[in-house]
Length: 384
Image (cartoon, rainbow, N blue to C red; front, side):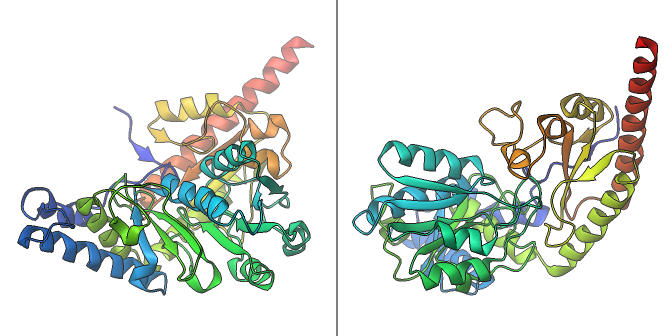
């Protein structure tokens, strides 16, 4: 069996053993419902509120401004749809970008069918939103701006402070999807009104996320039932997953970020030595674990298959794309041609990625791309 190197942590991560250990008691010992008034329920409630405090602290906010959800997709759907309908009397215009996650873009497309106006901002060639472009798109009907913090495909990290100040100036709610960036770069609730988070991108369990909602935000429940999560998200809380989420946040630290940054830079440096290779996205202000490279003339799906046969897991775009055989809308938005978009692969690593993993991946990717390019030259010569 080939050596297994997992370089697709932008899709999901392995659950940290400490996270698994923290969750275990809430499956078979402290398994109560946090809404129950007996001792088992009180145990669960205590775990729920302790977890809320941990995540609130990481965002420099108050526990009552954090609600738990089933993940990033639900948090994004709550934000886009609930803000839209709750504030419809004020306006019906929402601003987002062309490089958002599909759950934002699809929610916005759905709102267009409900009579809302959506502006999809262009970004520059590195994936950044220019402040003047955002400000020029604002109208007296604008109620929400939603801009992804760390892009899931090309790693671009937006300046939330600058963009947030523009929204504050115009008294518009500002939301960011921080699923990829949370714990991997600075993130402070003071710059935004709503923040989407999830656990499985930071070595926590799947199926749990959170939404920061700044106090005073005009938002109503989108999912109805009991009065869970301050009346904003009905449904019995998933205590084991929430505890695991909080533990993953506790474990994450700046040393992990520095380690991933070092490995990321090494991979980028070595792969850019290959002829006709190009980095997609910026070198600076980039997620510490993200590499996205175009090997001009190479068929990326076939390259991914060859790498998989050698034990290397990579990806082409977001794992959550409606049809991940389509060309990446993010790569198209930063100006890549169809050919170059189809020649690009994403590698995303984690704190569990080793130097040995990186050395092996660089060796195999370089060898595979170079042999492919050599074969292409020979084929072209034979056709002459």
